[in-house]
Length: 588
Image (cartoon, rainbow, N blue to C red):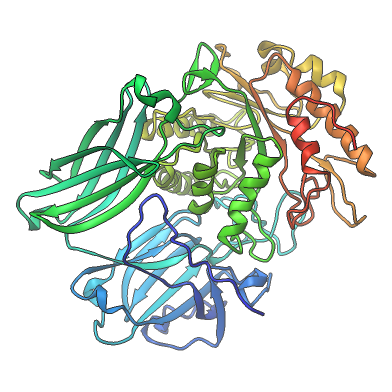
């Protein structure tokens, strides 16, 4: 078969021109006996299999397509660097490797990383063979049966069932190399302030000690027109500047970002030594504000009702990895065409390319951590570290409007009675606020909240009259216990925060009469529509809610409650879904 090559630039929020994509065929081997380290496989041992990176071995698109447990896997690739990399620092990047990774270049250990959803990198300059082939070796270790591992929906059994799906082991996002000067911009942090029409830019710069008189040029454009620029002297490894974009009477309001008008500003940053450019980076941002005012969720200082879809982020042939950038874009487009203005990306820190399309096309995203299932001290350490990396990675995306570190007490199953688990949920809430005070944080989505900025509820009730009474006011909403779980833990009180129904629906409809499940089942098109109206109509009309999240976008393996099937084919006409979200009464 012809394998797809994910060859688009993998980090659209921080883009350089000089880079080398390492996706494609790598050598591959299982290490079930765990002998690779002792036998120094990283010193040049050829491996007996081939795999297509960035697809995990459990996927069809990897060329292997085996679902048995193989928790230690090795990769090997020989790389010839382009001539343009000569004399520069060379950085090796991994988008995500599940779960632990060690990386060697030419037999030298250059990186170790723990966490299956977040990126890492290594400066490999010192170990390169500049005039010949360089060998990259990766050892990835998963822990398939460990239920305290932050894994999301990846099942700890070999065969998927219920709400758990196929696992991902090893490399599952793009691998690439870029070349930089010894002095370069290592990262940026972009914070919009629509109230003053300013963008606050923090730049982190490496190698400043090697030069005197460095300057950082910043140019900001809107739809191709240069609208602001500044040049600052680089005095330290971190520099901060606040740039005014325009006056309020100069199209300020019309240039804000929203799902309806996803306006983006382009940023070009150049690190200068005299007139010589040492580094050049391109980025973008959206001028938008998400806030809660007097118990009301606001986007850009105006009340905003969120109509979200639950999106598991599983893909045909690729498991957690989309076959193409085109499919990531298509998922965003389909979501918007159905009348949703956002997605709750469920139990997964999604590929940055998905967030790019949400930024570009206009779709709100709730950024959610992949949780463990059970609690342990090691779990606490693992999730704390990886969640910080996820927040840092996605901070600049205007589409991300809410952070969700925990879902349905996963990892904290005894939170009702266990003070340690309550403290853990509270600590994640405050940790997230300390990293980002510009977005609301939900401590435990669905039920058993400690402190949360939005109180969210999961409810798969299908009877219209019960939904109408249950969510008629905010106060009644937070007192219900639709899944037999308290919405707010004892000891924590409701202070008028907004309430959203962040999971509901879940209606199974299998047009091919195959096997699968949902929270309720439809027998034909009209029955499916009737059931959708019975759950969506009362929720849209409910006076106690400021938004909802329907379960779910697509079927995933045995779970057949998508509005689309797994191949993204609508089960009912797209226009029907759009009318439902608009509060209208569609007909087939």
